[in-house]
Length: 67
Image (cartoon, rainbow, N blue to C red; front, side, top):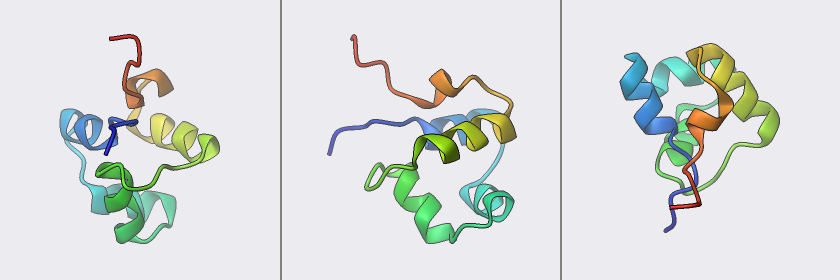
């Protein structure tokens, strides 16, 4: 499966967990886990909220496709 987002890596870099993110977003931890493993993707609005919660640029949450 192709990696599209870097949510798991950014969570680790910022010292947060998927469980913390799920509680902040009011989402099921299973959903966040699927985002972290790139099984499913959050929509852009949720991705923007995640970036704000983690205090990162939304681009930091995405894999660079120009490599």
